[in-house]
Image (cartoon, rainbow, N blue to C red):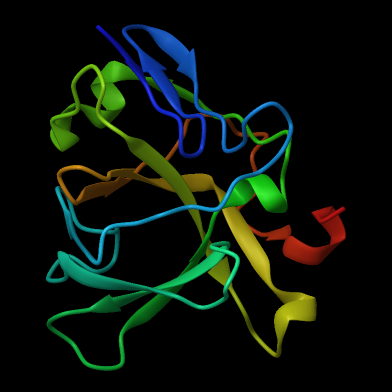
Length: 160
């Protein structure tokens, strides 16, 4: 099975493969479903599966995932291509099997952003990206085995 996707250039194949957050070196705006359901909860948030999605900027780079169950629970997520053009984690078809993806399904890749005092100190979790099957509105956070990927990569120092 090979699943190829154009919005963020994600490619998932049986066995090891590459998930890219940009196409041809040029990041593209991400279009996400209005609601997503996590097939498995985000670690530490086991009771939270349903989230609404809203853009935080006009360029389709930053988004808010808001819990449908718990008011005030929000994650800031980003399309990694704009900030980390070389970010290409290796994914396996078994990594995303819970999403029910098939050939032709659109799959999007996001990273969770932590903002402490403002955008200048924001960091992105590159070790545990969120993969979304856009057509189904299902998502899953994957904790990757690549120890070289940081939990807190500075967001703006990477932007070009």
